[in-house]
Each structure stands twice: as C-alpha cells, then as structure tokens.
Length: 595
Ligand code: TSX
Ligand code: MN
Image (tube, rainbow, N blue to C red; front, side):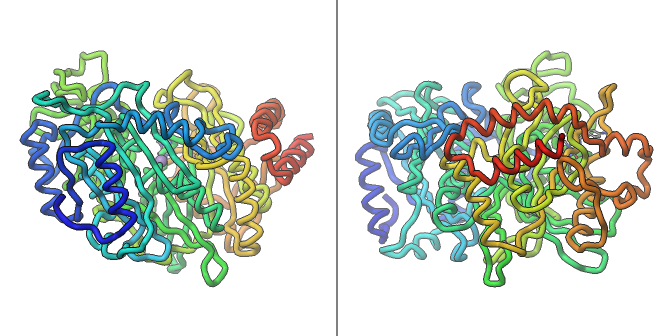
C-alpha cells in the first residue's frame, strides 16, 4: 500500500475488502495529473487504451461485447423489506444478497491491483457535497472517475480520522490465476453481475461489470439511488435532471431543471444555444441535480458531477455543437469506431461517413457493413470545465435557485409541444405519469408507450410511491417559492410522420414562454391537461411554421387521453397503499376535466 490512511472507518474497510478480495497490491489514489498519466501510460502499453492522433490526450477503449450498458435486471435495492424498495426495483434481502456477493468477491481481485478512489460528489468541502470512496480493481474506472468526480487526496484530508463516507465496492469479477494472461476488458458473465444498493446503510456493492453506471459508482449508484434515499430522510431532492441558466436580454437569470427519459436529447438541451442571440443559455449540469431549500426558502440546485458521460452516436455539430467542442482534448471514448487517421467516429457525426474504420468490436468496417461502427451506447467521458458554455457558477457551493421544472417525453401524438401545470400537486401528477415512446435506442418494440415517472424509474433508491409523496412534501415546504412546473414534447409528428417542431436551438422559444409565465407577463388557456400558451405568446419570428402546423402541434387529443386513463390507473395501482391520496385526487380531477 502506497500511503497510510488516517480515517478509522476507511482503514477498517480497506482491511476487510483486501482480505476478502485478495488483490496483489493496494493503491490509494490522489487524483493528480501524474497519477492519471501513469495509469493511461500503462493502459496504452497493455493495448487497452488507444491514443487518438487527432485529439490531444484522448483515448479509445473497447469493452467486451457482453458489457456495453447498465444492467437493470441485475440492479438491486436491498432494503430490510421488499415493501421499502417498492414495485419498480429488484429486491433481495440484505443478508442473502450479501452472502451471495461475498462468495463472488472472495479472491476476485487475485492478480490485480485494488485501487482506493477517494472522491467528492459536488465541490470538495461544499456543505451539499457527499464523500464517497470507491474500491475498484479496474484502472479504466480510476481514469473515468478522475474526470466524472472530484478525485483528490484533499478528500481524505477532509475526512480526517472520524469523518464519514459512502463506501462503494466494485470488482470486474475476473481474478487472474498464476501466469494467466489478462483479456483487454475482463468482466463476469451476466448471471454473476450484481449492482447492489443498501440505502439504509449508505452502501454500494457492484460486481461483474466494468461499464458506465455499473462501475463508475459515484454517478447513478451514489448520486441518484443512494442520494435519493438520503434526500428523502433529510428533506432534500436528488433528481435525474439537467440544470441550465437562461439570461434574458435585460440580464435577468432563470434557472431550469429538467427530467427526460432516455432518447429525448437531455444532454442536447443542457448545452443548447439559442437560435437568436438575444437570450443567453449556459449549462450547469447535464444529468443529475441535488437540490436543497436555501435560507431564503427557495430551492437551490448543484450538479454533483465533474464531467459528462454522454452517448456519442447522434452527437454532432448539428445536434449539439457545445458537446462537440467539449470533446477536442482530454477525453475518454468507449466503444466508438476508430478512423484510419486516428480519430473516433460514430453514427450521426457531421461530415462524410469514413470509407473505412475499425468498429467498436475491433473489426474492419466500411459503409457497406450491415452493423454499426460505434455501439449505440458508445460514450464520451469529458471534463465539464471544457464545455464552452459551462455556467460560471456551476461549482458555486450553494448552487443556483431553480425557477422552473420541466418534465417531458417523446410522443408522436396526443401531447402538445408545451403545457403548464395548474399547481404543484398537478405538476407532481405530470411528473409521476411522464411517458415516452420507445425508440430503437431502447430495448423492445419501437413506438410503445413507457411510463418513466420523473425519469427516475431506474434510479429511485426506495419505494417510488413514497418518492411521489416526497415530491408533494417538498412542495408543502416550498410553498410560494416552489418552481413552476411544465411538460414538453419536442417530438409531435404530422400524421404523415414528420416532426412538427424544429426542436434543438428553437426550443429556446418554448423556454422563453416559460420565463414569461414566471414573470406573469403572459396569460394562458386552460385545457384538460394544464395551461396552454396563447398562440401569439410563443415567439415564432424567423421560423417558417404554418399556423395550421402550430395548431396541430398545440392540440390536445381528448379522446386519446381518455383511452390512456386506464393505463395511468394501472400505473398508479402497482404502488398500492404507497400511492399518495393527493395524486389519486389529481387523477380524479383529470378524468373530470376530460369529461
Ligand atoms: O435533442 C433533441 N432535441 C432537444 C434539443 C435541444 N433531439 C434529438 C433527440 C435524440 C436524442 C430532437 N429531435 C429534438 C430536440 O428538440 N427534436 C427532434 C425531432 C427533430 C429531428 C430532426 C429535425 C427536426 C426535429 N430536423 C429537421 O427538421 C431538419
Ligand atoms: Mn442519465
């Protein structure tokens, strides 16, 4: 071991884990640039990291074809009773799960180094931040954690001898026998993968996968699943939301937090640049918001992360120029294609399709190939500080005051471009019933309606019915300071099948309407689903969208909504006696409005 650790709990834990996992060596990370460079150097020497000639200090990794995404079926919320995990989470009793996993962990780091990674979610030392320590046998995890979190020896200093932290144990689950040659992306078979959370003891155990949210435990595991359970106990919120700042031509700032299911372009919206440079748009975060009520009674949000772990395919100068400009250097790419010039490529990138690449599996690929060059879930890991429109206050310890919550989904019909909740409870109803049509990027049939309440279905660390109640309780605490709630749908189509709304940078027209509503500058029309904008209040200058298309885009299909009621009733019914009365009341009123 390279340094002595002062913290008693950490010392004891390192001792326990090393006895169980039996690594050849233990290394405590300090988060320095030298440490990063050394690890990358070793990864290059063993052929695991491929340096990219075209991007300074950037590297391509290829995962095992069996280890390419989060494994939701193998993800557990292990509470003393199943009722506490609720119907949307997988559950195994803590003692049983721990026994199974201890058997897997036994000797699992043989032939490997055990890295101890001290990290802070949120600025180091901020009162809102949380300290985690990840123990991992994956050097890929170490370098990604360097970008995605604040890894530093200052975290250990801050802990002192008595300080508390969230233990995050990770192993790829691939011990090496004496003399056995390592593979480039070792991992365990699917039936041995476990992503386990013990929210009542703030503990994370992950085994068998080296990919993304399965392995970078600060993100989905800590900052969402464990943090959501802490947030409920401590009256704050941990949400799957982007955070952005809009500044009006008069210099007034508005802060928006928005939750979308996957494949709705959340990262694109987080970094969106207005089509007309009158309003300024800045990114505070693209994935997670931690929010607390401040001394003035308003809700303040921080982005607990330090980087972007974004889906690469589909990212281009057309869809997200600010993301593209964040990727010029110091980036880790995973499962992208490699061009002959030594750059990465993925489907949907600007410019010509290369005539030849090495695909994400390491095979030759040409445009004639019938497979993808980049895996659809290929990722970039980039420092948030490299985003040209990162908000100057993105690391402010007290966060930014949220004015507006947006929920949304991808719907080709029924739901209009934008509507506003009548009040907080109605806003919680909109969040709790949020739904999206499945796309090729999801698994399963295309075009099915899937409920993903608050975009938190895979990330809520306790019973989702209780989570709905927590939202209602936060509204009670916020009172008149509660943000206004809106619901958007950028994806409404004409019957012939093309999109009605140009989306992307033109979405600022919708955001501006929301700000006008916050200011009370414009009225709205009451409908069955909420307030709709008056036609003339959405600024369409410079857009060639016909009044008929606008009418279609803003129309509410009451018959189709009536047909959806039974789906919402089924959705609510799974939460049984955890379903808040106030949301059942909202459903009743919705039915009444539909007539
Ligand atoms: O991210 C998207 N946003 C939000 C942007 C800030 N996407 C991409 C989603 C896939 C991840 C969108 N796609 C958006 C959108 O607002 N809208 C659409 C639908 C659409 C697609 C292409 C066009 C228009 C709309 N192109 C033309 O009309 C030329
Ligand atoms: Mn996410």
